[in-house]
Length: 478
View 1 (cartoon, rainbow, N blue to C red):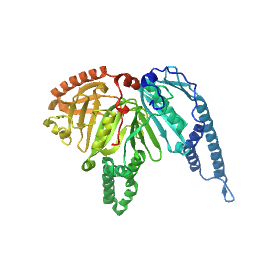
View 2: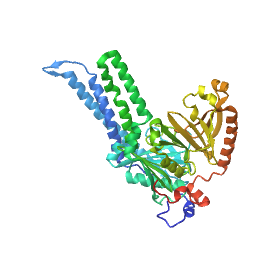
View 3: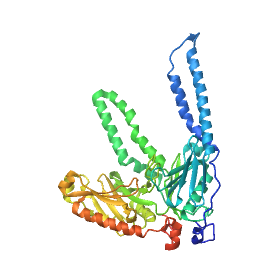
View 4: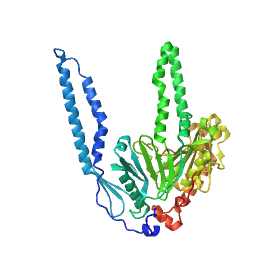
């Protein structure tokens, strides 16, 4: 991120943070907010008109109906003006700035004043998103996520796209311990998911397969009970799998993974675009998923857990939480190695579940197992959809065993690694109880030793002490 400056990272890291003047979002925020409310306002008007009945007729005109329509139009105008006024007041009350410690402050609220402080040393992700309506007028929203309990996210709506990008760069620079004016860091695109592979993968996914089978079953039952008219059920249920696949295609279209000194950059979207930047060291776990119909092509999906983004509304919304929607295994492993060096390989020395658990898990028992390397702990499970989850030792928050009545009878237990909330679950199902107890103790010790060697939160300060991070090194296309 020092491409525009001749100073070293050590000099940048030593720069004293300076407070900034409060800023407002772009004035067009009011217009976008009003436009977003139009469907709801129109729906209210339609409901009002639809509830009117017959009235007194004068000639060929229903007078009461005309009065209701006029009242509805007046109400719509009042609602629109009210929404516009509240949006304007909200815009004038919302300010954001950086204090003299380098943290982000956001003040907002019309009836109730709210003051938020986000410690950028705990930054987890910065997203620059363009919903469809905002994209039409050249606007974007910025989402800032930090580690912490409860609601640790702030969304600023809206800035121009250039302003949003500049603000994201400033946040990342301050979080890294650099001067805020160093500008945008260079990036190297690792991989872009081809549209053809994305379409094929969605058609072969387990979700689509289940949807198609459910549709066939519903139509078959309807035909058997109602005769040929039962085929009308196809009009209702037949499009569900297609719409689900199309929604995923729109969300993951043009999915690109890039790396830069300020972290991992993910970008995707057809109608609405999402651009997420995950700072170095913020990925807490990774999971490889392989549905049944993907195995002939050796494709996998890669999910990640980023601390701080697992809660709140729309958990892991959009493409967030997906590192790769589909990719050949060797490509996926190479990308994971860029994010978490040494953790891309999935050929661990597995400790399998004992054979006696096949009465408890008859379908997946052959694929159950746990493993540990010098860097991470891994679990595998699933038969129809095979999953391998990997968590670095330093990201282990706690380790414990659970054992139900059936498991006690079989002498097995489930080992669970607690990590930050997110899409990845690290569960070692149905392991031998004695061996699992030893694994728990060993993993707790590995986690303790790994956390003791963790570096500072300001990752460029860490690079100045330990040398360049993997994202500082030259990269090539995967």
